Length: 108
Image 1 (cartoon, rainbow, N blue to C red):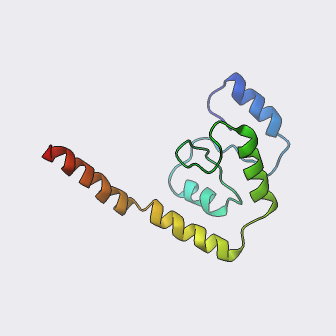
Image 2: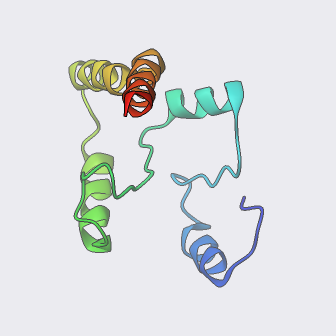
């Protein structure tokens, strides 16, 4: 469910309404969000920063999504992905890096 209406949202909802594999959750935080992440077969949040697909190329993104939907990760791959995510998105590490940037800026 989307909490605001646009022409794009309306078109998107029509296209996916009969696809039980797609959930439009709306705004979710806290434990419900953690549960969605932990039980998702595939979570997609396209970003220009991630560089996983050719930026702006919807066909490339579609192909990547289809690939992963049709070839679920093995337990070993999931373990590797989890370790990579914990390392890359470690808030303690991010806080230290942010503090170093601030300290460097204060020295100048």
